[in-house]
Image 1 (cartoon, helix red, strand yellow):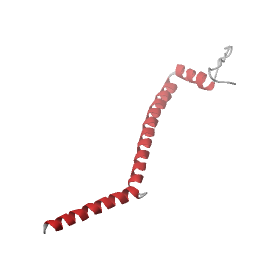
Image 2 (image 1 turned 135 degrees about the vertical axis):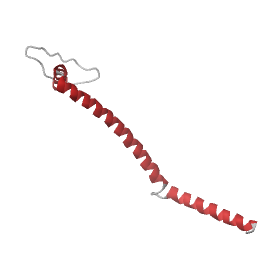
Image 3 (image 1 turned 30 degrees about the vertical axis):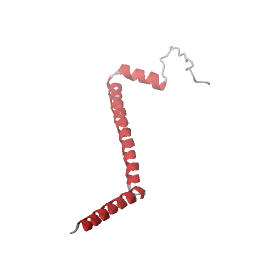
Amino acid sequence: MTASRKILWCTCYVAVVLGLGVLSAVDPNGLRKHRRLDVEVRRVSAENRSLRLENVRLRREARALAGDPAALERAAREELNFVRPGEWVYKLDEPGVRP
């Protein structure tokens, strides 16, 4: 092969590679879709980490509620607003909350 033919082949090869790169970047199912899916994977991974931490917290709370009467009473008072007979409940306005 002569030098001019090698240059022609190299030029054609580079042109084809660049053309495919441009088509991939422009095509909705190409690089744009890959980037969009990559962002979605990161978002879902972060959500999964958050949910795993929440699951650990809930398991710990469930164990405490099952075996600790004081924890059960605390949960009933805080979450269900239970009071013992004869107790007085004072509700204070929360700052920034308007009735």
